[in-house]
Image (cartoon, rainbow, N blue to C red; front, side, top):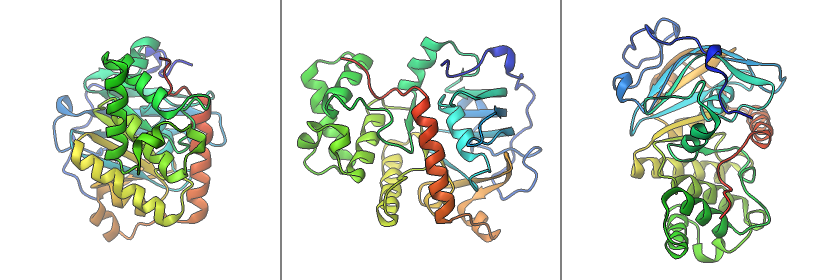
Length: 314
């Protein structure tokens, strides 16, 4: 499946509304979610994004405009039917069959993703964009060890020797808090503890040194305390690496833990945006165990039907 549709389907995004200062806002179409920088310097800039879907599990969205720069973080949050997951999957090029980008522009480091051909899209999705799926097993080959998969992908991207690649992978596993990383690297993905597996996927994403990391329902499937700890880890790594971070979840507490700014989606549109404190002051909250479980299952189903860049042959 081609990650992004034919360019004829994309509406021209030029002349989009000028961003206003970040504040809780009830007029998203006139006042899009801004970055603190100009569009040209943003890592991610989305204008007028519309997503069509024939799937009951994936919500269509309309007129989504947002921007994230280096070192910034933005959380997309809403109920299961709000469309936050749809937006994140579209930007990551992981929309499943039955859903597609219908209108708008998605720029990542100045490169237009809408209409991009398969090969350059795959290169971009494996390097500039790092994707953390709700289902951490979805991007792995269960017949190969973690070390072989991650080191093989690293060698293909940057051309290092096998020994250098393996050492770098162990260092990355250590960075994300995996205990005895050399031993864990020799294991197969399905044999890892769920907490460790989520951290391994984060290490895999970091191996590409991405400019943008997209996390869908981070820590999905973990116990509440472990999910909160994973959110803190993601925030700490973001602070250390200073990439642009986009998080989509139904769990406001997870988004608040990882992000500085929040866009609240309702019925496929951005209903309001602002800092975490501003959104809290507005009385917004969407956390519910049922919503979180439903969103995780939707994102996992979407991940399993779309291509992933984690497992790359040696």
